[in-house]
Length: 522
Image 1: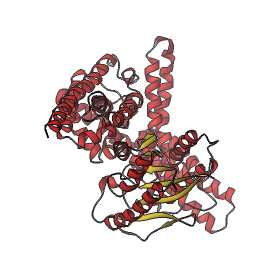
Image 2: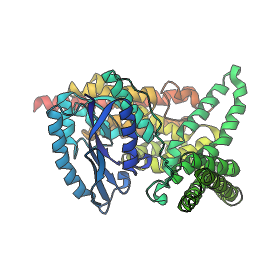
Image 3: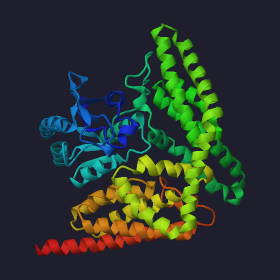
Image 4: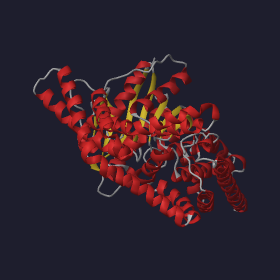
C-alpha cells in the first residue's frame, strides 16, 4: 500500500511570491512528483490568501483548498478570519487521522503550527511521523513543538518544482522508495489561469535571480587568486548578462508560458541590458505581458501551436527589447545609480552611524515582511555594480550570524533541555548555508531579553561593518562569505561576523540563565 501524505499550509508571506499565489498549480506539481515515487496525497488543508501575508489587512480574502474524491477543491472566497475558523475544523479532522495511523507524513507550506494547524502538528509530533516543508517561521515553530522535521528550508529562491522535488526526495529516502523527479509541463496548449497582472512581482523576480548574483560574487572571489586572475573577464561577462537573467525570469513568470516566455525574455534582456537589472526586469515583464496576450489571441483563433510560439516569443521579445533599449534603459540606469549613490552618501557622511542604523532596523524589517520587498532588491542593485554590497554584509553579519549566536547559545545553554534539539538544526543551516535566520524566532519571541540582545548585537555588529568599510553578501556558507568581501576587507568581514555571533551568544546565554533561575524559583 502506498504511503499516505497530507499537505497543509498557506500561501504565506514570501511563499506568495514564489508560487503560493497559485495554489492549484503549486499543489499539482507536488502531486506529479509524489506520484513518481508511489506516494499518495490523501489530505489537503491549504489557505490561499489574495495577497502576501507579510502585509495582511482586515479586508484580505482567502479560500480553503481541500481534497475531495482525489480532486483539489476550493471554498468560496471569504475574509481570512472566517476561512481560518473553517480550517480549524479541518485541522481537528486531520489530527484524528494522524492519531489513527491514516497519515504517514506531512508536507508543510508556510503552515501555522501555533494556530490553525496546531492540532495536526501536535498529533504528528506525538506519532513521530516525518515532516517536510518550507517557511522559516513555521518550520521553526514546528520543531519547537517536537515535530520530526526531516527536510526544512526557508522559501527564498525556491520554486514549485524545487520544493516538490525536495519534499518527495526526503520522504523517498526516509522510506527507501525509488524516486526520479519528473518534469511536468505547466503549459498544455492554453494560457495559464489567473490574472496576468497579479503575476507581476518585482521582489519575486529578483529573488529567483539570486543564484546569478551569487555566482558572480564567487567568480569575483576566485579572480583575486593570482592563478585565476583571468576570471576577471568572466566577472565582467556575468555583470553584463544579469539583466538578461532578470528579463528571462520576469517574462517566464509573467507570461505563464514556460519556454516561450523565456525566449521572449532573453531577446528583450539582450536588447535592454544597458539599463542594468532594473531595465532588464522591466523589459522582461513587458515581454511576458505581450507573450501572454499574443498567445491568447493565437489560441483563440486556432493558430497552430508552433506558429503561435514563434509569434508570441519572437514578436514579444523584439518589441519589448526595442522599447527597453530606447525608452526604459536610460531611466532605469539613472534610478539604479541613484540608489547606489544614496547608500554611498550615507556611508561617506557617517559609516558607523549608517551601519548601526542598518543593523538595528534589519531585524524589524525581516520580521515585519519588509526585507524581501525593499532590502533584498537594494542588495542586488549594489551587487550588480561591484559584486558585493554594504547591505549584503549587514544581512550576513546582523541577521545570519546573530541568529547563529542565538541558536548556538540555546544548543549549549538552553533554558530547558528540549530547546537544544530545536536550536541545533537552525544553527547548522545558518552557518552552512547563510540563511534560515527564522530559526532564532522561537527564542526571540519567547524572551524579551533575547530579543533585545539580538537587536543590541545586530546594532553593534552593524556599526563595525560601517566602521571597517566592509561589503559582502549573505546566502552563502559562513566560511565562504569573507572571501566574497570587497578587496582587502575579508579579514574585517570575518571579524564582524565573529563579533556578531559572540555578542548574540553571550547575551542569549545570560538571558537564558536568568530565565532558568527564575523558573527554578517559581
